[in-house]
Image (cartoon, rainbow, N blue to C red; front, side):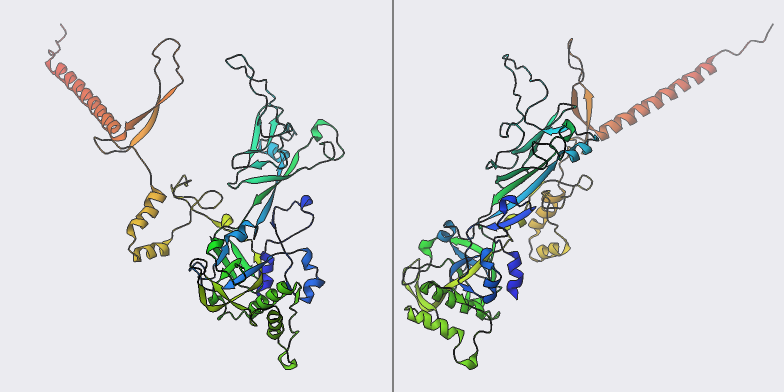
Length: 482
């Protein structure tokens, strides 16, 4: 039942018509295999035509501590041979009509091109400037199939026939990608269906990018019994344990994964796969095919096959330490299990930042993985850090990495300086009048200057009034008329 959920999350073989697929996102494993242990329904449903995993040699032992908590150790040489290698296909559609509508125009005035419409500028040495918009694109403004693009590289370019401006669409993701397909969405000849005029020119484009996704630490794997886990380390083959026949396991899982979960089917599959590999045949694992009352158990049938090939009846072997070369004093369970690579990858989920984009209003970090935002440190996380005594870490998270703001302060009064611009004075004839110069002004100084000027104005007005009164008092009394 667990596999019913895991099977939907595998990076398998989704289709045989990959060159013609236009899915937004599609996962594909590069080196799939048919499982050695199959059921009757597996063949009836033609599951081998769409394989979704690889037969791996799996050892069950606690080795180095890197396999704790459902983690698994992967053999580095197996990885280099292609174990678990996969790709992600992403399709992007560019519509020039939508681009034109954003600018407010209803006419089809945009077209894909890699040639500038404006005449090239003449350089100082007399040579003409470039007429190509971007040198990595073709003359039609489209990328070449098989071309590798990194973050910031051009994917397409188009020009505006009305204004002569050009624009380049770029690869925005951090991962390196290969251009798998370029499709012109329209009729033959670059025109829309049934049209031959200029207004019916090519307006839509579909670009499929292939992103290689080989296993990295933290990527998820699973058997067909719900035993899921993440890869914890790539361990060198020279240090991996090996059997008497010189076989090193492809991956190592912890024995604590079995007792509480009771996934006995995986232990039987390990025996059956090992016997099938030794005898060169597929094993039938159809449920309810064996019954205790009928004499032979599944364990007995596969155990006899192993014994006939010269191996232990129950699939265990003595293994030798890859570090010391000495035999480990235990019979360790090793066999062949069908393992699946799941589509949950660290590359799609990693989110980390120290500082970055902030909200203009609150100056706090924005949210969202695509926008380079942060993860909210809430009240409960704050309490956890406080209870651990990590107050300096809390200060760093809440202050330095969140609300920090640098401001200019006046040395004299301690007031915050405000930026003001003023036009640069003309020092000579022909000087640039339009250049702006930034000047920091102390608000308190400006305020004190304004207050002082107000006081001076008030004082001058009071003095004038006093002088007027004095002059009136000192004036001689008016003489009566004769």
